[in-house]
Image (cartoon, rainbow, N blue to C red; front, side, top):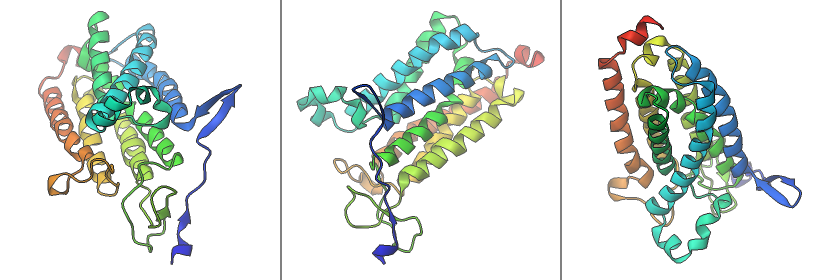
Length: 275
């Protein structure tokens, strides 16, 4: 039975070299998602009602990158392995080995959005709506990088599952390729939903609706995928069988519902007239 299982592709963790510098797939996922996301964000922010100028979106790309990296890394350290990094502080800088928390990255980007909007006198919710629309792009590419690295694999699966896989570091049991489940749901599916919603003037003039849709959509997708993903060994299952990822999604889902309700109840009639 085991011989029928899909073998895990033995990817080289380094995508390519630039001289002596090796570019890891994980870093490449961030670079590509930020670049492509920036291009899409320029077009989204130009849609009526205009949320920001081309120059402002260009400037925010750096802010977003810093929010993702600093927030994601600090979130992982605080939420998942505070004890380890307290005793191994130099490991904090080794981001090429993974160890990024989406929930921490989300907080980092929210802070960046708030500070940038205030500095540039932009409507925070309107600008946030356009930026959060493209976040699933980075999520999907990031999960693909997790798969390439053979990390964050899934829970044990039936050997009869056609795509069950033996992971190099996951022991001899067949497992769900949960990284790909997340890439398809948190990434591709949520990206399509967000882009379709953002193309509707009805959604764009209800400031906060798109941001809420993303938060709620991600929370639902992540909670679903956590049922197939092996919990981190250093945390395991929480009471009632929950995982840390599912617990962190609860406030995100509630915030998303509140933002969608706020947007629906407070349409910007002046913006609607020009949409």
